[in-house]
Image (tube, rainbow, N blue to C red; front, side, top):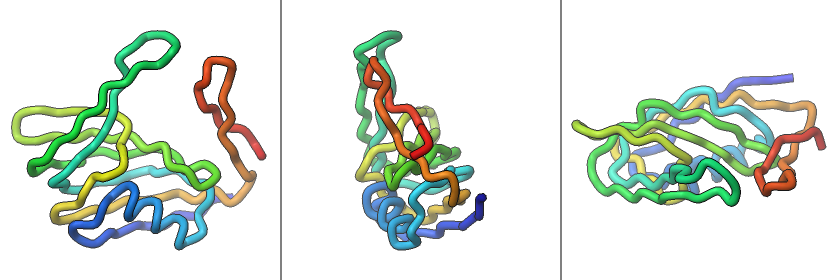
Length: 135
């Protein structure tokens, strides 16, 4: 069973830790799929994988400049987001896992497809990767 909600954050909110987490918790969304998102940022934090095996290695990028979030998708499982995005400025493009501390400059929109059943959780496999299971 699913239902859609459009999320419209205000200007200059912290996108991930402030708004995304706050909004879906306020709306009691435990499980969902982020099917679309766009925004302008003036601060962006994200990470990219740097290894091809385990343990997984990451590079964290922190940008402070006018940026466009041109694509966003991911999941919210048992109240925890796992969201990836594509971010660009006038000359470069980055993609990766969106981290806490991103800040909306002018506009932010996100559509969450809520999953009401079955209840879902994440559990690590033998290599530590978090996989989705029915609760």
